[in-house]
Length: 586
Image: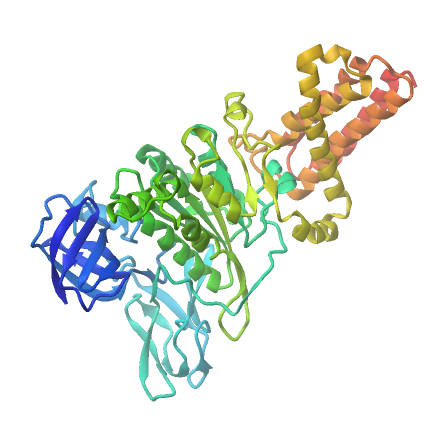
């Protein structure tokens, strides 16, 4: 079915004569066959968003519908690859057209030449349904790719072969109840705007261990949860996301560079292949999919890139893996929605964003969760969604930040004043929050005893007290405070500088296990306890307590190696107790 263009407005094209087309259908526009997607239909008139530059396209040019929605190819070969917003492999495109993407270029998302070693697990005669595992492919040294029956197919296996196949080769056949023979391949397709099915969802109960102390201890994110990282330019969003991608205890990472500056995305593309996965010793790319859709690429493709990424993430979740999707940034995606909404002449909402902004954000974040996957083995997988938000001028009262905060359960608010003070991660401990604390508390208590959550509560209380005391200090100075208040200020300073501050580029400080975090926090709170005991015993010159040698050792304790921290911390604690008692004259 083909039609003729009647109007071109940037990435928006209007065409007549497409009565057989449906909303969300992919179309080919003009002589070059530019990729587009139908947004709205009025009779036989279709409004189409084109994912490529439309210059040179004019009224009268032909539009051909493919009859199928925007879909992604899912199979071996996704990992280690770099795609654009509509899943075109950028390394392959570069081989064909050089450093710029030629318009209308069409390259399969998964290589049709590369052969994969498939090992069959199902047997002839087995009754299988959507999600059942047919066999496996060792996609990378880090990931065993499970070849599953497509979600909407069921029947009896009549033929299945092990061996070397490309993703398009037939590996066997299913016979449905109607007697139809369905060919099986290593690859399946899925429409990006339709969430992949699962049996049921569960409440997230385990934390995502990121190795970042302020995240894991103060504002934890559950596996299968949702989080937002808002912050102004230069506050460290990208480094926080790199740390999450590198250290989080997930099996697969999908990183979407959605509308960010080209040089920033270049840094990601240059750095990720060089990062080493601490769990396997292999390059981090062996378990990563990158989607690069920079700000100078066509704006419509930003909108598609988010859906492309989360569909790939759901596919690996369906295998029973823990997956993290990192979107940088949803603000640029919202800007793409705003531009397309304006060109469609829809009624604008706040600050020109479409009225459906909140519902689109919710549709994205609600695809996260802990699920019982399709398939007879009832395996579980999780999908954790982390979205960066780039509010203009760092103003989180703008619509995208506010809509995101209403949806996500973890808010890591980055603060430019902390970043300028070289305090990283620049997450503000006073306005950040995690709504998973209550659901994760049983796990913490079972794994580390009641002490971990009690220490966290005490630390947060001290930081809150410090903020209140700072107002008094500004008026009358620190010397006028009582001894107990001065102890509070000193301990808060230790919490900020020795615990919350973390160097992503220091090999020993970049990652901190839960055991190490708990021990370091307990050490700082032990210092507080000994100081308060000395003050209650009558010591008035608290400056003596702040100058003990063990106080400096606590500051360097976070760089103690993982295997030695327990004995080192115990030694510091003993020294600290004796030195404070000595300073107090006991």
